Image (cartoon, helix red, strand yellow):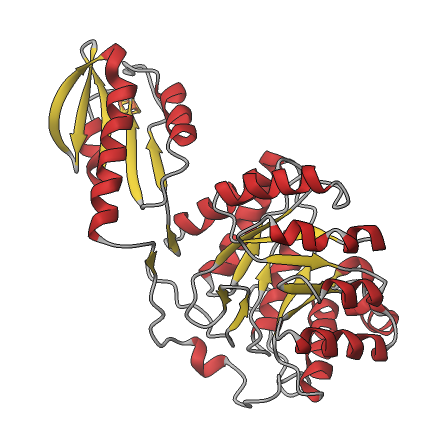
Length: 394
Ligand code: SF4
């Protein structure tokens, strides 16, 4: 299925392009104390190994701001500084990082925001304007009575307008709510009134499993509507899991084709191999492969090989042996004890062959689409107050 993506203004965070025709990027945030440089760099390296494309660190105090140069020097992907309350930390971080995230709702007087704009402009780095349900402006809370999706969208649009009015458009926007419906509605409303690129996420989504489910529903809905240019899956878990879930969401929607996609049958009374163990082991052992490959593990040959037709390569259990197949065609029978090792070797080989054929990840192209007629027509300003769209699912 082809997803018509919303056409947004493109910005660059370091060497990662966000918006426009760039693929949806996956980001995460360190859970370490930023001042603990050794632990923070170690976690950054784990995130980089998992394919994380943008990494954010909290900068809650001056000591954290002081260590940013050390952290930045040790990493290869762009670094984003997360700042709340104290604009002076943003000014310091802007000297080092690739993007500064501020929340206009808690940064204080406008002159402080202007100082931050001046600092990021000096290094031509973008700003992320992050609006959060927990820190909305008082007048919006009074107007709407609660941090509603409309209030979130209006807060973000007000901030974007104010920045646009002083000529600053090098920005992306996030509107975070922990309720899936509210987050969807807020992003939907904003997306129809501005062409600013969007960082999407469900904040405080929960533990590894509940957070992954909530994020998959929320982000999956938005992405399937064409909304979202970069994402973070917020989990109360190892941030590496956030990256894995993020890519799985994009792969499921065919917005990214990256790495191994393990297709495993749910097993039933016909199962002849340990599908669960093998599928988990494959994901772990082949996590380093970036070439897109579908690898299937099927419990038996009854439906197995036919069901695995879409897979580039796979195994199925059969009469005490394993059957190795490619594109639904039998290649050879393999003794059970050699099955995993054989499959891993074959996948590595296939990945190398594919890498030689094409360099890098396949990018999903952006043909012109229905979003064009929906986007604001003005080149310079978003459209708050002109036509407020009606949420389609209300
Ligand atoms: S592939 Fe075989 S074992 Fe797996 S669910 Fe289908 S019939 Fe059952």
